[in-house]
Length: 404
Ligand SMILES: [Fe+2]
Image (cartoon, rainbow, N blue to C red; front, side, top):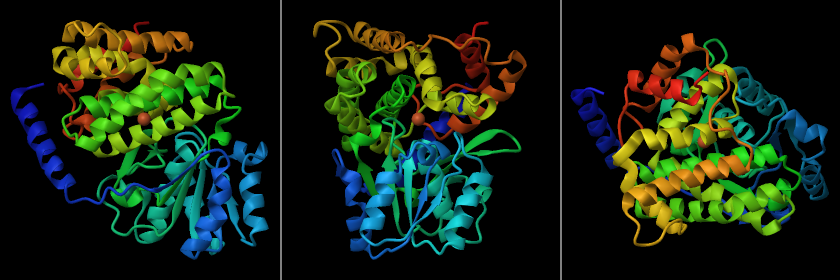
């Protein structure tokens, strides 16, 4: 990247760092533990709401996974509506359909239950309900949501996206296949319910990819240039929990403690990255998700070690700190050795969970210029990465992650 472009990125990030001090990054009220979902009627009653719209994907209703929530609401005399049209990488149409269902049924609150897609859909639908003149496209970018929706409860059923605590809703423009983010602290849910019993029975592929997504959040937040004491501490704690529990959860989904640890890790990493941003692993993963529908966590898992290596010396010191936090090397090892050990540990985690080191003929060569431009457009100047790269430099990474 040219020097003046790099200078522009740094000035822009400096301004964001300053502006962050004036933004309301509230954390949601957090309810944790096995069966925590049973507290939802009491939460709604306390807040004075009577008819939530439950936003989920079709599998949640088909497999009766939302039944305990519906029974709890029914038992306590609540009425409710269900929108179960959420799809992976939700599009404008999905968000608009959820919003219209809430309006049609006079719903007074939103409950998102599911993975990142359900929560992103509900966050975007809430933003549209609170800002009736806005369209999904008009909300894309930073701080475009004028009014906050009044009650959104998020119940994650995977441990990774951290969407229950983040300022972002990622949606896809169906015309261009481009993913874009609505980023505004007004999207942070009011309540996060971390009920680890909902994660029982998750397929191992989902456990591995969502867990690696959480790791990518923690690592990219920690090595970036916009950090606070809290986000550093949360990112380190998340890495430690993932180091201790992701493989355990992957190999035994019935391990209550590992499930709970991964839910907490995803939440903490979510708080960290929503304040401290992510980096090029996410920018590249979003471009691949939009173009080829690659699951977000899987894309991040494959891309992360390549991006960290491409940063070279610029992320060495901070990766060494993460390496120390999980005791990967002797204390006397050099920063370079510690950083290398950390990246190797990510490779090993991937390998142990059958995640390949590269994609296999996924990326069409002729798409690389367009994809790298999209990633550069997403990452620059916003993401406070250790080393800025322009579209040309990112194109080399696309070739590396799918050598063909
Ligand atoms: Fe992510």
